[in-house]
Image (cartoon, rainbow over the protein chains, first blue to last red):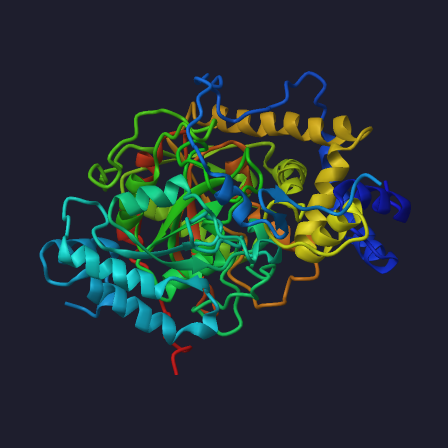
Length: 95
Length: 485
């Protein structure tokens, strides 16, 4: 299997990463060599194997739905690259 | 008493408790040495002024009951430290100042340790040579232009260069054990769930574990005592009875059964590594252990599995870096354009590569063929270990398939870089503890390590084996301080 440029651009879009044609070509080479390596898994028959979804064999614990941190609005907004008073600012979404 | 920075953690703790040295003296000693070692590029952020202040405060009101009384320690820049910049080696977090503290580092400060600074690492811990960091590659103190390994490369380098008495790293596929092996130091990847992941910049959540790195096994056990804890802030933290690893540390491993997996004798393995492994087997026998041949038949599938599971989880974890709530933002014509430019300028090439792989294997139409397949093979890999542990108490392997390589040597070939982790990755996939201890040198004088893999939650056992073997190996570091002019 080979991943073509069109697919690379599609994955880039899904990944929210902008790619130029040149960068897409380089990524195609890298990804194809990595997927050649990954294809090795097809040697194995796994129809009857249960997938391992969690390595920690415990059931998730329930906890009470309590607010533990209060008045952290300022802390949360502190690291924002662009803010307006208590809000995160993003480029205009609705025309 | 030897020069302060040359002392082990255990010696420093004893000397401070016996009032032979002060926290201020220790802190000053490491700061002075770090100032002379800038060429190694280990620190992303230093915390020297604040550390000195805290050391003086400790000396005024010392509490000698703590496990790390007034001991300055630098940590990997993947741990969130409150009010101290945390970058994960990435441009996208270059201005990020956490408003909270990771549990693992908090455990250290609670026991009296003092933050010396934040250590360089591969970007988002993705790399095996510390060459993917936005802040430049780290030099190994072992030799000029040599990689320290990765991703905890800054941690390994700072530790081996004696810029910090011990340190902590994180290990997703070998990122503690491989750099420990490359620098002649000890590194423990604990059982998944042993150390809290709260406040650690996430890479692949089902594989990530924090762990101690040290000059010797005793220090490793001491630091592990401090950092391993049950934490309700991490839903995968496990509430098991943790032993007092350093107090119970014992060299008596007589009768322990140690497995030698034949599949780790990989094609093209250098003779030096084979010889080292044989030496290790002999040392284990000398310690009274019984050697048992075992098989881990799916070993060869571990790396391909890892390169599906880890990028898939990474692509999901790294979706949060959108230029809105924190971190770097690039200007865009609209919201999507802003996201795309932010992520394409903010992430380095390897991170983008892995996000793309992860997005692809999780995308519609490919999920079953790749991600589900990998989860099934992961099950087979774990079952291999379960079977083996019916016969043995621990497993002995080389830590890496080669010694450290030169900066730039493998940078342009991702697959050859990934092969570095061939012996460490299966351990993460199975969630087991593994420790790398220095065991010899290659023909160039570069350190080589042996890995001891344990059963889940059996850290005490592998620490004991490592402790017993360490004495027989009697490793001597050949680091010459070449970088201090």
